[in-house]
Image 1: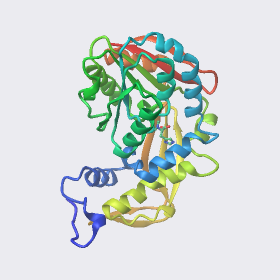
Image 2 (image 1 turned 90 degrees about the horizontal axis):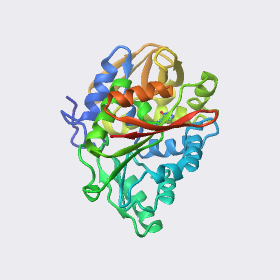
Image 3 (image 1 turned 60 degrees about the horizontal axis):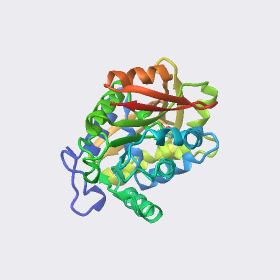
Image 4 (image 1 turned 135 degrees about the vertical axis):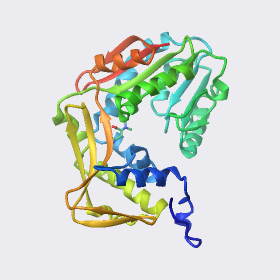
Length: 321
Ligand code: AVI
C-alpha cells in the first residue's frame, strides 16, 4: 500500500490498490528489477514516441507506412461494404488514413485507445477529413476490451493493429491478445496486423539507441512519470539508456542502468541500486514471419496473406477468423 499526503496533489493517486503504484513497487522489488513498458506513455512519453517514429534510425514506421500504401488496394479489395474498421491502440490514427483512402466502403471507424486526448484529437481530425465516416471511439485499454465499440456492432468487422505493438508482448501474451481480438471481432472478421521482423542487430540496435538520444529520453521518461505521479525520487540523469539484442528470445530489450550506488524512494518504499544494476523497461519482439503466423494460428486465426517489405524488413499479415 502507498501513502497519501493530504497537502500534496502529486500523491493524489497513491492509494492502496492503485495499479500504477502496485506494478512499480512489484517490478522494483523483483530481481532483476523491471518496470511495465505501458508507463512510458504519459503526455511527454507519447510526444517522444511520435518523435521516435520520425527518426532516421527507427525504420519501423517509415517501412510499414510505405508497405501499407503499396498493399492498401489489395487489403481494401477484401473489406466488405459497410464494414467497421476497429483499431487497437489507435493513438493518432495516422496509418488508418491509408486504409480509409483505399476503402471508401468502410462506414464506421472504431478506434480503441487508453488515452482520451489522443482519441478526441484523432476523432475530430478524421471527422473533418472523412465527413461520411461514422467515428465511434472507445476509451479503453485495448488489452482489456472485450466487446467492439458500440457504433461498430452488427457490421462486418475488420481489425487493424499496426506499428508492431504486438511485439511489446511476450509470445504467450501476444497469443492471448490475438485470441481475445478474435473473440471481440467475431466470426467472419478479418484482422490486419503489422509486426516487425527479426534482422541484423546492426540495424536493430540503432533503431532503439538513436544518435539524438530521443529513445534514451523516452526510456528515462518512465522515471519522470513515476516521480510525478507516485512521489518518486528518481534522478533520471543517474540512469543510462541501454538497448540490447537478445538473440535467444528474438527481442530488443531496453534497460536503465544505474550509474552509481543509490537509494530511490517511491512513496514510502525505498529501493537500493548498485552501480551497474539495471531496470528492464521494455521488450520488443521481432518475429520471423513463420513464427508470427504460428502464434496467430494457435490463437485461432487463419493466415490468409502476408507481405514482407524489402530491407529493412517489416511484415503485414491478414488474418481471418
Ligand atoms: C510501440 N512499440 C511498437 C515501440 C517498439 O518499437 O517496440 C516502442 C518503442 N520503444 C523504443 N522505441 C520505440
